[in-house]
Image: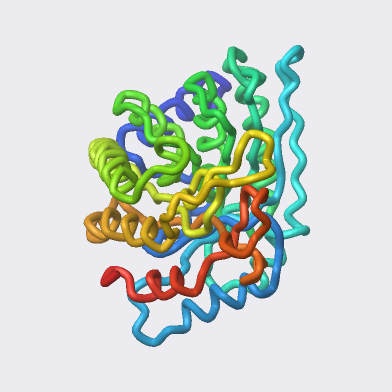
Length: 334
Protein backbone atom coordinates (compact mmCIF):
# COMPACT_ATOMS: atom_id res chain seq x y z
CA UNK A 1 0.00 0.00 0.00
CA UNK A 2 1.23 3.49 -0.85
CA UNK A 3 1.41 6.07 1.91
CA UNK A 4 -0.59 9.26 1.50
CA UNK A 5 2.60 11.11 0.64
CA UNK A 6 3.56 8.49 -1.95
CA UNK A 7 0.11 8.72 -3.50
CA UNK A 8 0.42 12.49 -3.71
CA UNK A 9 3.83 12.19 -5.36
CA UNK A 10 2.48 9.68 -7.87
CA UNK A 11 -0.50 11.90 -8.69
CA UNK A 12 1.78 14.90 -9.17
CA UNK A 13 3.95 12.85 -11.53
CA UNK A 14 0.91 11.88 -13.60
CA UNK A 15 -0.19 15.51 -13.89
CA UNK A 16 3.35 16.56 -14.88
CA UNK A 17 3.52 13.95 -17.64
CA UNK A 18 0.10 15.06 -18.89
CA UNK A 19 1.18 18.68 -18.99
CA UNK A 20 4.39 17.94 -20.85
CA UNK A 21 3.15 15.34 -23.31
CA UNK A 22 -0.53 16.14 -23.70
CA UNK A 23 -1.22 12.45 -23.14
CA UNK A 24 -3.59 10.99 -20.58
CA UNK A 25 -2.49 8.31 -18.14
CA UNK A 26 -5.59 6.47 -16.97
CA UNK A 27 -5.04 4.59 -13.76
CA UNK A 28 -8.02 2.33 -14.41
CA UNK A 29 -9.81 2.28 -17.75
CA UNK A 30 -7.99 3.34 -20.92
CA UNK A 31 -9.25 6.45 -22.67
CA UNK A 32 -11.24 5.81 -25.87
CA UNK A 33 -9.50 6.86 -29.09
CA UNK A 34 -10.14 10.36 -30.41
CA UNK A 35 -11.11 10.47 -34.08
CA UNK A 36 -11.17 13.41 -36.46
CA UNK A 37 -14.65 14.54 -37.43
CA UNK A 38 -17.44 16.99 -36.79
CA UNK A 39 -18.83 17.81 -33.36
CA UNK A 40 -21.88 19.84 -32.43
CA UNK A 41 -23.55 21.47 -29.45
CA UNK A 42 -27.21 20.90 -28.63
CA UNK A 43 -29.16 22.35 -25.71
CA UNK A 44 -32.29 20.24 -25.81
CA UNK A 45 -33.17 16.80 -27.09
CA UNK A 46 -34.98 16.46 -30.40
CA UNK A 47 -35.16 13.31 -32.48
CA UNK A 48 -34.76 15.28 -35.69
CA UNK A 49 -31.28 16.37 -34.55
CA UNK A 50 -30.23 12.73 -34.22
CA UNK A 51 -31.79 12.06 -37.61
CA UNK A 52 -29.75 14.88 -39.16
CA UNK A 53 -26.54 13.47 -37.71
CA UNK A 54 -27.34 9.90 -38.78
CA UNK A 55 -28.23 11.02 -42.29
CA UNK A 56 -25.04 13.07 -42.56
CA UNK A 57 -22.93 10.12 -41.42
CA UNK A 58 -24.63 7.71 -43.85
CA UNK A 59 -23.27 9.38 -46.99
CA UNK A 60 -21.31 6.69 -48.89
CA UNK A 61 -18.40 8.92 -49.88
CA UNK A 62 -18.30 11.04 -46.76
CA UNK A 63 -14.88 12.46 -46.00
CA UNK A 64 -16.12 13.84 -42.75
CA UNK A 65 -18.57 12.51 -40.18
CA UNK A 66 -19.87 13.35 -36.73
CA UNK A 67 -17.61 11.64 -34.21
CA UNK A 68 -18.53 13.48 -31.01
CA UNK A 69 -21.47 15.41 -29.60
CA UNK A 70 -21.94 18.03 -26.86
CA UNK A 71 -25.44 17.85 -25.27
CA UNK A 72 -26.29 20.22 -22.44
CA UNK A 73 -26.76 18.25 -19.23
CA UNK A 74 -26.13 20.53 -16.28
CA UNK A 75 -24.70 23.64 -14.73
CA UNK A 76 -22.60 24.95 -11.88
CA UNK A 77 -23.63 27.76 -9.56
CA UNK A 78 -21.05 29.55 -7.45
CA UNK A 79 -21.44 30.90 -3.94
CA UNK A 80 -19.14 33.90 -3.95
CA UNK A 81 -19.26 34.29 -0.17
CA UNK A 82 -18.51 30.70 0.80
CA UNK A 83 -16.48 29.76 -2.29
CA UNK A 84 -18.57 26.66 -2.88
CA UNK A 85 -20.00 25.26 -6.10
CA UNK A 86 -23.39 23.60 -6.50
CA UNK A 87 -23.77 21.14 -9.38
CA UNK A 88 -27.05 20.49 -11.16
CA UNK A 89 -26.64 17.51 -13.49
CA UNK A 90 -29.50 15.80 -15.31
CA UNK A 91 -28.13 13.59 -18.11
CA UNK A 92 -31.40 11.67 -18.40
CA UNK A 93 -33.02 14.76 -19.91
CA UNK A 94 -30.74 14.94 -22.95
CA UNK A 95 -27.40 13.11 -23.02
CA UNK A 96 -28.94 9.68 -22.35
CA UNK A 97 -31.44 10.26 -25.14
CA UNK A 98 -28.79 11.31 -27.63
CA UNK A 99 -26.58 8.38 -26.62
CA UNK A 100 -29.43 6.08 -27.63
CA UNK A 101 -30.19 7.75 -30.98
CA UNK A 102 -26.89 9.06 -32.38
CA UNK A 103 -24.67 6.84 -34.58
CA UNK A 104 -22.98 4.02 -32.70
CA UNK A 105 -19.59 5.02 -31.38
CA UNK A 106 -20.31 8.74 -31.12
CA UNK A 107 -18.42 10.16 -28.14
CA UNK A 108 -20.81 12.01 -25.84
CA UNK A 109 -19.36 14.95 -23.90
CA UNK A 110 -22.19 16.34 -21.74
CA UNK A 111 -22.03 20.10 -21.29
CA UNK A 112 -21.75 21.57 -17.82
CA UNK A 113 -21.79 25.35 -18.01
CA UNK A 114 -21.75 28.31 -15.66
CA UNK A 115 -21.77 32.09 -15.62
CA UNK A 116 -19.16 33.96 -13.62
CA UNK A 117 -19.84 37.48 -14.83
CA UNK A 118 -19.22 38.99 -11.40
CA UNK A 119 -16.03 37.01 -10.69
CA UNK A 120 -17.92 34.54 -8.52
CA UNK A 121 -15.40 31.84 -9.42
CA UNK A 122 -12.26 33.96 -9.09
CA UNK A 123 -9.83 34.03 -6.20
CA UNK A 124 -10.70 30.66 -4.69
CA UNK A 125 -8.06 28.53 -3.00
CA UNK A 126 -6.68 25.49 -4.82
CA UNK A 127 -8.50 23.28 -2.32
CA UNK A 128 -11.81 25.00 -3.06
CA UNK A 129 -11.28 24.65 -6.82
CA UNK A 130 -10.43 20.97 -6.37
CA UNK A 131 -13.60 20.44 -4.34
CA UNK A 132 -15.69 21.96 -7.14
CA UNK A 133 -13.91 19.83 -9.73
CA UNK A 134 -14.53 16.69 -7.71
CA UNK A 135 -18.29 17.27 -7.83
CA UNK A 136 -18.18 17.44 -11.63
CA UNK A 137 -15.81 14.50 -12.00
CA UNK A 138 -17.93 12.31 -9.73
CA UNK A 139 -21.07 12.99 -11.78
CA UNK A 140 -19.36 12.36 -15.12
CA UNK A 141 -17.64 9.17 -13.96
CA UNK A 142 -21.02 7.81 -12.83
CA UNK A 143 -22.57 8.67 -16.21
CA UNK A 144 -22.08 5.51 -18.28
CA UNK A 145 -22.80 7.35 -21.53
CA UNK A 146 -20.26 10.14 -20.99
CA UNK A 147 -16.88 9.85 -22.69
CA UNK A 148 -15.92 12.98 -20.80
CA UNK A 149 -17.25 16.44 -20.17
CA UNK A 150 -17.52 19.76 -21.97
CA UNK A 151 -16.97 22.55 -19.47
CA UNK A 152 -18.06 26.06 -20.43
CA UNK A 153 -17.52 28.57 -17.64
CA UNK A 154 -17.82 32.11 -18.97
CA UNK A 155 -16.00 34.37 -18.82
CA UNK A 156 -12.84 32.29 -18.53
CA UNK A 157 -10.23 33.45 -16.01
CA UNK A 158 -6.75 32.11 -15.38
CA UNK A 159 -7.78 31.73 -11.73
CA UNK A 160 -9.93 28.77 -12.80
CA UNK A 161 -7.06 26.58 -13.98
CA UNK A 162 -6.71 24.58 -10.73
CA UNK A 163 -10.34 23.51 -11.21
CA UNK A 164 -9.62 22.22 -14.72
CA UNK A 165 -6.39 20.50 -13.69
CA UNK A 166 -8.10 18.59 -10.91
CA UNK A 167 -10.99 17.70 -13.20
CA UNK A 168 -8.59 16.30 -15.78
CA UNK A 169 -6.70 14.27 -13.20
CA UNK A 170 -9.86 12.66 -11.80
CA UNK A 171 -11.57 12.02 -15.13
CA UNK A 172 -8.46 10.61 -16.80
CA UNK A 173 -8.10 8.23 -13.87
CA UNK A 174 -11.65 7.10 -14.65
CA UNK A 175 -10.95 6.67 -18.36
CA UNK A 176 -12.70 9.87 -19.44
CA UNK A 177 -11.71 13.14 -21.11
CA UNK A 178 -11.99 16.78 -20.19
CA UNK A 179 -12.71 19.48 -22.74
CA UNK A 180 -12.72 23.22 -22.18
CA UNK A 181 -14.52 25.84 -24.28
CA UNK A 182 -12.45 29.02 -24.47
CA UNK A 183 -11.72 31.96 -26.74
CA UNK A 184 -8.27 32.47 -28.31
CA UNK A 185 -5.71 33.62 -25.75
CA UNK A 186 -2.03 34.55 -25.81
CA UNK A 187 0.49 31.73 -26.19
CA UNK A 188 1.59 31.63 -22.57
CA UNK A 189 -1.96 31.29 -21.29
CA UNK A 190 -2.80 28.77 -24.02
CA UNK A 191 0.05 26.57 -22.82
CA UNK A 192 -1.50 26.50 -19.36
CA UNK A 193 -4.93 25.79 -20.82
CA UNK A 194 -3.67 22.85 -22.88
CA UNK A 195 -1.96 21.45 -19.79
CA UNK A 196 -5.23 21.65 -17.85
CA UNK A 197 -7.51 19.70 -20.20
CA UNK A 198 -7.40 16.97 -22.84
CA UNK A 199 -9.16 18.87 -25.63
CA UNK A 200 -9.39 22.62 -26.10
CA UNK A 201 -12.60 23.69 -27.84
CA UNK A 202 -11.69 27.02 -29.42
CA UNK A 203 -14.43 29.54 -30.02
CA UNK A 204 -14.18 30.22 -33.74
CA UNK A 205 -16.87 32.91 -33.55
CA UNK A 206 -17.45 36.11 -31.58
CA UNK A 207 -13.84 36.93 -32.37
CA UNK A 208 -14.36 40.68 -32.53
CA UNK A 209 -17.85 41.62 -31.48
CA UNK A 210 -20.85 42.01 -33.75
CA UNK A 211 -21.24 42.41 -37.48
CA UNK A 212 -17.71 41.43 -38.48
CA UNK A 213 -17.29 41.36 -42.25
CA UNK A 214 -16.56 37.99 -43.85
CA UNK A 215 -13.08 39.15 -44.82
CA UNK A 216 -12.25 40.35 -41.32
CA UNK A 217 -13.73 37.20 -39.78
CA UNK A 218 -11.52 34.99 -41.95
CA UNK A 219 -8.45 37.03 -41.06
CA UNK A 220 -9.20 36.88 -37.33
CA UNK A 221 -9.91 33.16 -37.42
CA UNK A 222 -6.73 32.49 -39.41
CA UNK A 223 -4.66 34.25 -36.77
CA UNK A 224 -6.45 32.61 -33.82
CA UNK A 225 -6.20 29.06 -35.15
CA UNK A 226 -2.55 29.49 -36.14
CA UNK A 227 -1.71 30.58 -32.60
CA UNK A 228 -3.67 27.74 -31.01
CA UNK A 229 -2.15 25.19 -33.36
CA UNK A 230 1.37 26.41 -32.63
CA UNK A 231 0.83 25.85 -28.92
CA UNK A 232 -0.89 22.51 -29.52
CA UNK A 233 2.16 21.27 -31.43
CA UNK A 234 4.46 22.47 -28.66
CA UNK A 235 2.40 20.77 -25.92
CA UNK A 236 1.21 17.78 -27.99
CA UNK A 237 -2.31 18.94 -27.23
CA UNK A 238 -5.56 18.39 -29.13
CA UNK A 239 -8.17 20.95 -30.15
CA UNK A 240 -11.42 21.51 -32.03
CA UNK A 241 -12.77 24.77 -33.43
CA UNK A 242 -16.34 25.96 -33.08
CA UNK A 243 -17.87 27.50 -36.21
CA UNK A 244 -20.95 29.77 -36.43
CA UNK A 245 -23.21 27.56 -38.53
CA UNK A 246 -26.41 28.95 -36.99
CA UNK A 247 -26.75 32.72 -37.15
CA UNK A 248 -27.29 34.80 -34.05
CA UNK A 249 -27.00 38.46 -33.14
CA UNK A 250 -23.20 38.39 -33.04
CA UNK A 251 -22.70 35.75 -35.72
CA UNK A 252 -23.11 37.93 -38.03
CA UNK A 253 -26.13 38.73 -40.18
CA UNK A 254 -27.67 41.56 -38.19
CA UNK A 255 -27.47 43.65 -35.04
CA UNK A 256 -30.36 44.00 -32.59
CA UNK A 257 -30.73 47.41 -30.98
CA UNK A 258 -30.32 47.74 -27.18
CA UNK A 259 -34.06 47.76 -26.67
CA UNK A 260 -34.45 44.51 -28.57
CA UNK A 261 -37.17 45.91 -30.81
CA UNK A 262 -35.47 46.27 -34.16
CA UNK A 263 -32.47 44.99 -36.02
CA UNK A 264 -30.11 46.22 -38.69
CA UNK A 265 -29.21 43.81 -41.46
CA UNK A 266 -25.52 43.50 -42.36
CA UNK A 267 -26.13 42.11 -45.84
CA UNK A 268 -23.87 39.13 -45.07
CA UNK A 269 -25.04 35.54 -45.18
CA UNK A 270 -24.10 32.84 -42.71
CA UNK A 271 -23.04 30.56 -45.55
CA UNK A 272 -20.12 32.88 -46.34
CA UNK A 273 -18.82 32.67 -42.77
CA UNK A 274 -19.03 28.87 -42.82
CA UNK A 275 -17.14 28.80 -46.12
CA UNK A 276 -14.49 31.07 -44.63
CA UNK A 277 -14.15 28.82 -41.57
CA UNK A 278 -13.81 25.77 -43.82
CA UNK A 279 -11.06 27.47 -45.82
CA UNK A 280 -9.13 28.22 -42.64
CA UNK A 281 -9.61 24.85 -40.98
CA UNK A 282 -8.97 22.75 -44.09
CA UNK A 283 -5.28 23.64 -43.80
CA UNK A 284 -5.06 21.71 -40.53
CA UNK A 285 -6.95 18.54 -41.47
CA UNK A 286 -3.79 16.47 -41.91
CA UNK A 287 -2.33 17.43 -38.53
CA UNK A 288 -2.76 15.18 -35.48
CA UNK A 289 -3.40 18.11 -33.15
CA UNK A 290 -6.57 19.32 -34.92
CA UNK A 291 -9.57 17.05 -34.33
CA UNK A 292 -12.19 18.90 -36.36
CA UNK A 293 -14.86 21.56 -36.35
CA UNK A 294 -17.70 21.89 -33.86
CA UNK A 295 -21.02 23.26 -35.10
CA UNK A 296 -22.83 25.98 -33.17
CA UNK A 297 -25.51 24.66 -32.83
CA UNK A 298 -27.95 21.84 -33.72
CA UNK A 299 -31.55 22.29 -32.65
CA UNK A 300 -35.12 21.55 -33.64
CA UNK A 301 -35.36 24.92 -35.39
CA UNK A 302 -37.51 24.95 -38.50
CA UNK A 303 -37.17 27.02 -41.65
CA UNK A 304 -39.59 29.52 -40.11
CA UNK A 305 -36.94 30.13 -37.45
CA UNK A 306 -34.28 31.06 -40.00
CA UNK A 307 -32.90 34.61 -39.56
CA UNK A 308 -34.62 36.06 -42.60
CA UNK A 309 -38.01 34.79 -41.44
CA UNK A 310 -37.72 35.36 -37.71
CA UNK A 311 -39.25 38.33 -35.93
CA UNK A 312 -37.10 41.43 -36.19
CA UNK A 313 -36.46 41.65 -32.47
CA UNK A 314 -35.24 38.05 -32.07
CA UNK A 315 -31.56 37.77 -31.22
CA UNK A 316 -30.74 34.11 -31.57
CA UNK A 317 -32.49 32.15 -34.32
CA UNK A 318 -30.59 28.89 -34.50
CA UNK A 319 -31.76 27.30 -37.75
CA UNK A 320 -29.03 25.90 -39.98
CA UNK A 321 -29.96 26.56 -43.59
CA UNK A 322 -29.87 23.74 -46.18
CA UNK A 323 -27.08 25.61 -47.97
CA UNK A 324 -24.83 25.29 -44.95
CA UNK A 325 -25.41 21.53 -44.81
CA UNK A 326 -24.37 21.35 -48.47
CA UNK A 327 -21.17 23.23 -47.64
CA UNK A 328 -20.37 20.76 -44.87
CA UNK A 329 -21.23 17.79 -47.05
CA UNK A 330 -18.79 18.92 -49.76
CA UNK A 331 -16.00 19.82 -47.32
CA UNK A 332 -13.13 20.41 -47.94
CA UNK A 333 -14.13 21.36 -51.50
CA UNK A 334 -16.37 24.23 -50.41
